[in-house]
Length: 204
Image (tube, rainbow, N blue to C red; front, side, top):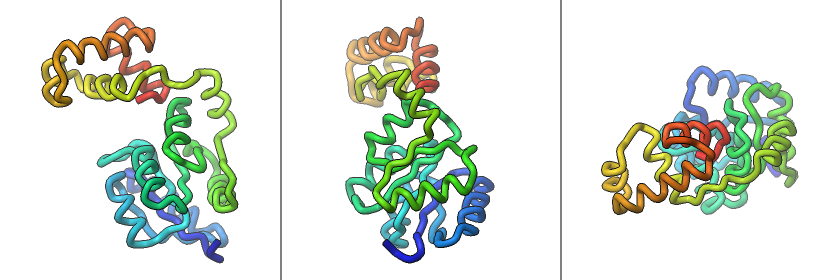
């Protein structure tokens, strides 16, 4: 472990990113070596700056923090990943852990707790927000398959079956079946409600 922990910070809201960088920069033994505002900038920043820990927001343009974590795990397995989010959704925690994240915290956690999590993951520990971990156990794993989640995501902007089918290179009937199954699994009455429920639970 380096004497000084090198940290990459990925957060799309500039004010939040700068505030986090300032707070973490005050912590002894932690140096913020890079900041990015998009998920698809994370890999290049890691290659350039070689941080010890990547601190990733979930909802970013380009790609999500969870997708970025998965790519980092494949390309830089030695890098520790901390997911930080405003959205304390149980499904997000499960997806983050499946993607290889080492820690998952919500943004209202004190800076000292976040700094402690950064130090702990470098010691090989996993750090989870306790309330969110309990919620994740209560809600359970997402019942959606990858394809059902993709189609439901595609429907989130109001796209009809024909547009989704064209974009995903599927038949109309296949799209209709995926949406029907997703609606049933989420307990919704229509696709709009299915999208909302799946997002609230962190399944999308």
